[in-house]
Image (cartoon, rainbow, N blue to C red):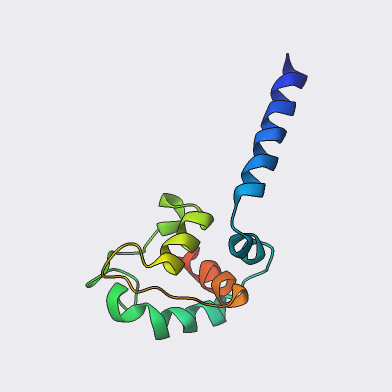
Amino acid sequence: MTVFVVLLMLTIGIIASQRMEPYARDVLALKGNLVQGRAIFQMNCAGCHGSQADGRVGPSLLDVSSRKSKVSIIHQVTSGQTPPMPQFQPSPQEMADLLSYLETL
């Protein structure tokens, strides 16, 4: 029974990773740079989310990594599907850097 459960979980994981967008896969394969991520945040996000990420026009991003998965954050940033947040298309490395910074909040 235990072997079956392990095989089932591995299969689900493989299927889920195949369904992940190539951009998200590329981002998650990279190591983010915290300093660069903070700079990207200050230039592109702080105007709405506050320089300390505690919210202004946009919601607070403090502890966001415990509320949203990395894939959800990537989708949120790049999709622009939640007005008034604009669509933002960072390179995979820039997105990895931004994720690295957001994880420290």
